[in-house]
Amino acid sequence: MESWLNVCCVLSEKKRQHLHFEELVTAGQKWNLNLEHVPIDKLEDMTSSGKKYDVVLHKVTEVMAKARRGDEEAQQLRNSFLRFLEAQGSDCCVLDSFDSALGLLDREEIVEKLKGWECVDKTERGKDNNVEVVKPWKATIPSSASFPTKEEFCATVREGITSLPLILKTKEAHGSRKAHEMCLVVSSTFLEVDNATLDRFSFPAMAQKFVLHNGVLIKVFAVGNKCSVALRPSISNRVIMDYQTHATSCKMGIIFFDSHDVSKSDSNCFLNDDGAHLNYEIALPKEFVLDICKEIRTIFDVSLFGLDIVVNVEEKVAYIIDINYFPGYKEMADFHNVLCQHILVSTKGE
Image (cartoon, rainbow, N blue to C red):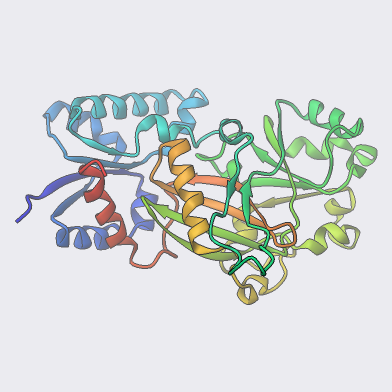
């Protein structure tokens, strides 16, 4: 019989609830895992006590993000977390490494790592030489640019350097509500009306080409070498095609929105096509999605992540528009057992 492993789960209270932690603890017992929740503000005491763990599972992106912004309390908590990890020693398995998780906090850094990246579906397309080979699927990222200030962004739009439509996203990918506050820029009308309209958006920002995708977002949830896919509502093509019929802000060429309002499973936003995701068949081959996840795992050295993907079916291109560290997994079947199995596999270096 295999010995039990002690797993320290450094999670915010919100994440603990989202994980249904008590159910995870119960699942862990079937895998000989003793899972213990330790809030990040209690780690100093754990370090002082000298308690050792076999595995550290963590989601402290909010603290990490605040620390990067200069918040002193968050910096103290981050340093406490790092001291705790160091005290655990090299035999402790950390999911995922601090630096790897940190690498998914900044959209500009993510884009830089994926610049020029492509993943092409390698599955066989034709039965024999008499059958035309179907164009394979390809995955990549939309063209993107970084803008430190509103003035620089407006100047490039005015000069026609930056093409529209596009999505403005904060440079920070996690750690605050602002990371979910976005701006769809449909036309340059806002420059003629009142470019102060953009004052409510937080720069620095990433400008990402808007891809027409029939109002459907593909959410991919990855745990190690396993993944699952769910469909969510997204921004309808009609918003771009007929933007002047919508809200006042849209008549100025800009629509502000929160991604949580647009792409939750039960979203009913004016940007959505009602029920579009419910009548949509997943076009991406399963093996191709697994290949994408494998490459993302390698590039970012993470095993717990989520992908937001939009698809241009005509071009057969899947665009990764966001990557999230340790997302919610409520749509992954049997998630607790999948995670427990991944913890065990990771301790064996597989």
